[in-house]
Image (cartoon, rainbow, N blue to C red; front, top):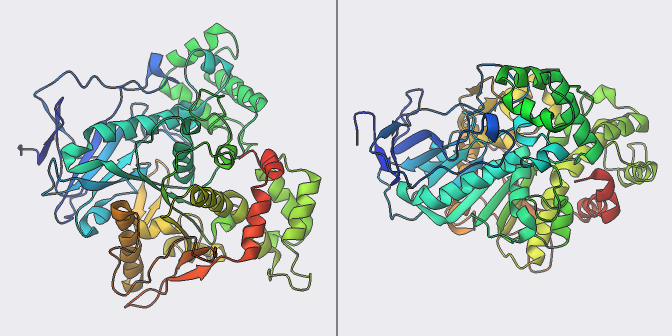
Amino acid sequence: MSDLGPVVDLGYTAFAGNDTSPSGIQHGPVVFFGGIPYAQPPVHALRWRAPQLLDESIVTSEIVDARNWGPPCLQVPAMVGVGSEDCLTLNVWKPRNASKGDELPVAVYIHSPQGFPLYDWVEQHHSGLVGVSIAYRLGILGFLGGHLIAADGDLNVGLLDQRAALEWIKRNVHNFGGNPDSVTIYGESAGGASVMMQITAYGGTRALPFKRAVAQSIAFGPTRTDVEVEQSFSNVAQLVGCPSHGTDALKCLRNASLGAIVSASNRLPSTEPSQFAPVVEGPAGFMPGLPTRLIASGKFIPVEYIGGHCTGDGRTFTLGQPSDFQTDEDIKKLLLYWWPALSNATLYKTLKLYPSPDVPGSPFSTQWNRVSTIARDIDFWCLNWFLAEKLADHGVDNVYSYAWDAPDTVLYEAQPYLGAMHTSDVYYLFSGTNTFGNAGNTFNPFNASEAILSKEAIAYWTTFASTGDPSSFKGTASASWEKYVVRNRTRQRMVFIRGDDTMTASRMKTITSVEIDRCKFWMSEDTIAELRI
């Protein structure tokens, strides 16, 4: 203990934490440690290079103030003064009485803006849990690609940051009372994609620094072509005021001011949905192939797994309202915006597989329901289905699936036609959060039924980190979350639904053969080639 707060000594240095939240709210017996560096600052000569380890052999007697959050990594839209390039830090929450040797399970959330606090996860856990969230480079600084960076730097440094943070946790979490051999990683949307890519990292040739994984609404793709990647590099260089090619281009970009990088981020052409995302590197790289191809070929290390989606995920990405979708052409236009390489043949098959509302027997009452289901399946549900299937095929017994059908109340009241829109599960897992990139976050107080669903979900999520079975320590009124595959090869998932003020309406539900057939279509070799996921 110091005058600053509770202290954890890591050997090479010590950190003083905070037994209230940074906002001063008491959170029971939970201590927070924020802004702990896990790698050297990735600035100047270290821009677009793999994270460099701290020298943990240099021992200092200093007690570092870790009572508050570290700066977030820059996002888009970016602002000078909001976020930092020196952002390779993580945050730790531990029970007040946890100490070295306690061997508590560890829950790691990717990533770590202030909108994702883990106080409730740690406080609610039945027998003790250590929570960690990690920040990593995003946008231009995390995923600028091209042959110049491949030759004099590293590709996918944002993913390498995540791995460096996980390795730091492996080395040091025991000092907080955590068990380095019982680490579970979690992520939503791009974070869900990160979970998938950590599982498939290096094509399964290197040991994983975690045991279990939870992927929420995986959002990934299409992976950009080499031509597109090179064009993005050229665009960035020109906007920063650097040569767009030649040996001086990268040197100039590494010497450019952060303000110039921020300005370039905000002025880039917005014609493509995702300009800075992971790229395929080749056989020796972190991402040696498309994640779906790595999964299909068994080039991953099996882990215990929960995967799922929000029922309204696709509605969030239709870029419109129900009235905007009246014809097949409206649907084709949206699909080609997100997945421009889809062929006419694939578009035709898609419209047949998801029949128009005017076709007898169609399950869709409107074109809106039809298009949002297509968008949800391609980018969220079917990736989770595919990974769950392959993990089960590789003998993993503890595989679970879910669908989240409880809307984020704040977003729903603003746009009710979105239903249980993208990130609705995050709202309940993180104290009613609504995050806005680096612009801040808000927390909506729960009413009684929301609070019950939040507590139920957190119990499942954190219990999985303990035992690999989310129902091991569920609430007495909660349904048993059964495994994805049952004896007769039926597939099933938990559907999360708000109930009344005493219990939720969550229940297990069979996954229909129609849903599975759609996913088989999207995850087929030919379709994956067009989706580039």
